[in-house]
Image (cartoon, rainbow, N blue to C red; front, side):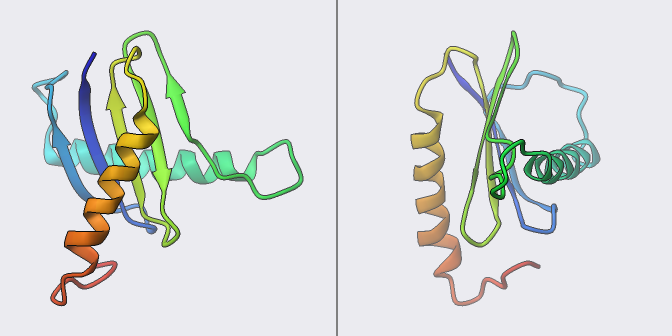
Length: 117
């Protein structure tokens, strides 16, 4: 069981941060990561509008396949924290909450950080 990658995507769909812990594909370029973030942002937005319930849906929270599990946490500001992990990996929501806490402590409290740049 392992965590493969972590992505942080702003509310406009731009990739803020990306880290691979296990390289699944060696031939991915930085443009590929930007495209993946944009595609995920679009799919998330579509999923939130296609909800079968009358209330507004929270969007795509988890996607599981044979070889990966993708889990997303959206903050109040609209920033999305995405983790790609082994399908057997448990407690990804706790991991994403801890990543968000670190982001809030070290990035958002930085006086020189400009939000949504």
